[in-house]
Length: 89
Image 1 (cartoon, rainbow, N blue to C red):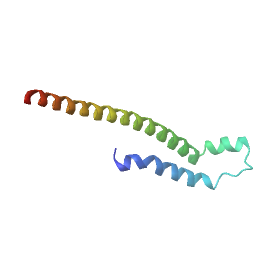
Image 2: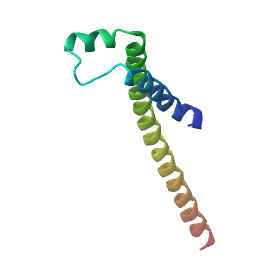
Image 3: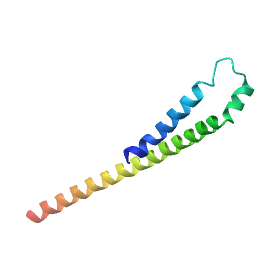
Image 4: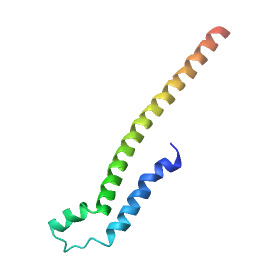
């Protein structure tokens, strides 16, 4: 996966965190939290979270596929080596 594709969710999350950091205090009420979540910065944070979750899931799937491909390539290598040994004897 390209460096930019891996770092994009992190950049979006960092931007969202910076935007939201000035808005949140420990004395905010539940209604204020809901209002903040509906603000443009809140929407950005929600979108960033969604992108991060989907990216993580896609990376897990890609990792499993790469592991399987590496395993298959190794098995093919071993099979070829066995055939070469049989031909030599």
